[in-house]
Image (cartoon, rainbow, N blue to C red; front, side, top):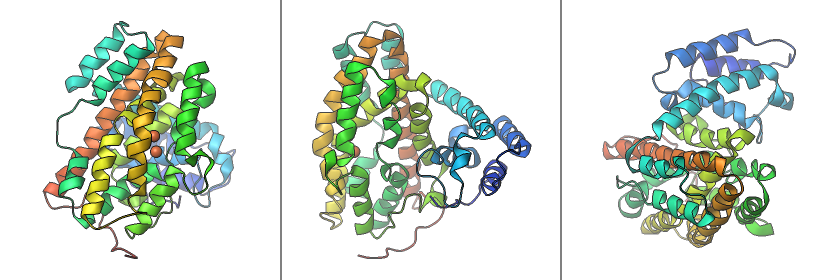
Length: 354
Ligand SMILES: [Fe+2]
Ligand SMILES: [Fe+2]
């Protein structure tokens, strides 16, 4: 990823530090900027400065940031500030999930009445049906303009161009049946051994076909905090063994809420005149995720809870976090489009190629 534009004192201090190579120096100004920002923020989910900083800290564990030395990845002072931001972020997500129908599904997990793999899968499927608010997929299918579907791709690109990677961190942390299920799903996400068929590569071709640059992070400066928060949540869950239940719940509900919306996205792109290879990414998910959702619910999430019932509430937490963040990102996009505004922080450049 290129070095993004700063959005406040935390990202400014962080990116300034990452530009230096004095790994022994402490980072007191970064630490105090983080503390001040955490005290001042109204809502960390919408805090551009903190979410951008967290994204950059996580990117050190993925493909890195241009010109930034890889030795920063495990720098103790960076891990310390990351942990402070994460703790506020996790608290916000845990309090945020007590909304609407999601709370009821959570209560089932909390009272531990569900401990069989089948029971876990059924509860997750019920959660995946929640939310009768307006949906981005319906909007894309029926009404979205070319400009709006291009914005939609830009929002998705900060995850889909590294699709599956945050969940992969969890593989060594899972036991038996859950691990096998995770590997089976992830193998498909990475193209099943076929070059060029990784879902991230299919998504890159969708972007190219819509006249967008598929380089990872190319549009990071246009993305609002809430979009960054939705991908930061995956890294938060994926990078910590403590949260292995949450990353499993995250993947399970993600797979369960994928097949039908992707059919609608495909319909929307065809309505606007696109065909293969632009529509391949969506078509692939209609088929693949109808299978993945079964494996993810019963064998992955269910298998994990059967092997360790104490993880049930975190499986639910991870799943509920997806429902919450999807709803908030969707509300952000639809709110902007209904008012005739861009859902991005600045206008998107015109298509580069037809
Ligand atoms: Fe996928
Ligand atoms: Fe999938």
